[in-house]
Length: 67
Image 1 (cartoon, helix red, strand yellow):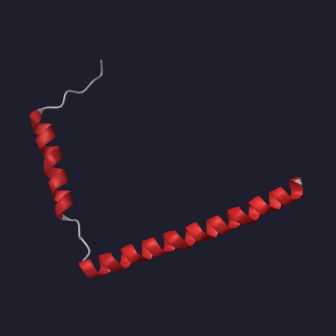
Image 2 (tube, rainbow, N blue to C red; image 1 turned 180 degrees about the vertical axis):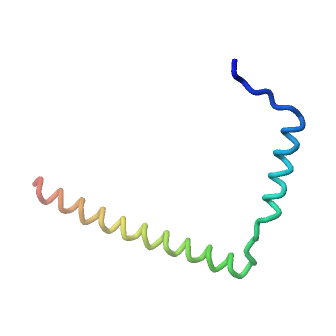
Image 3 (cartoon, one colour; image 1 turned 90 degrees about the vertical axis):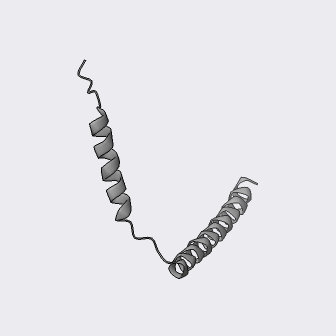
């Protein structure tokens, strides 16, 4: 009840729209892709180190309070 039946024409028009959208994508060149990837990796490592240090300090602080 109330279900719509997709015809082959509707499916084809959806794929046409999808293909048109994919043609609009502008892919980055290799140089900018390399820079952006390096930036993401570096920021991830730095944030990981910061979280580890905060966790270590919190752990020692809690152990100090408990003992």
